[in-house]
Amino acid sequence: MSKTEREKMLANEPYLAHDPELTAMTAIAQTLLHDFNTSLPSDRATRQNLMPQLLGKVGEDCTIMPPFFCDYGRHIFLGDRVFINYDCVILDCNTVHIGNNVLIAPKVQIYTAYHPTDPALRLTGVELAAPIAIGNNVWIGGGAIVCPGVTIGDNVAIGAGSVVTKDIPANVVAVGNPCRVIKTV
View (cartoon, rainbow, N blue to C red):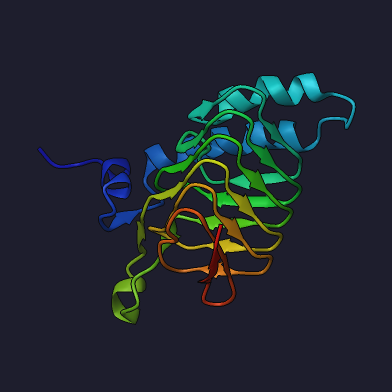
């Protein structure tokens, strides 16, 4: 039996994003994001009620500051006490697992999605997506970019503006473009 485009997407295999199932999932997410992002600052209850409808899992005591943007939402899994600051983008074409006690600064971008480097293949509309995992007790500084397929270990601090292109081991501070370990903690 052949896989659906969503199954291919989640298996990090070439898939077509304009598939009707994926398009419908995006439409639902965009409606929920609209309600989330246009809620009044004083209406934390509305945002708290919308998060479980949008995301795959929301742990205890999580906060996402609007505006927040994602593709599907349901492929994002938050542990307990996650704080996501203003203007975060998570392209969740594959799974994004975020551990407990994670702080994500403003304008952080987390991208599971990527495209073929071969121009002829790219013109076919084929896309790819690799999962991202962020451990416990992680702090990701403002404007950092986390690229497809990356794992960030526990107790890590990622410096502002860093571009994380490869896995980062636990218990380190990593900075730069490309992001590299500068010290252990």
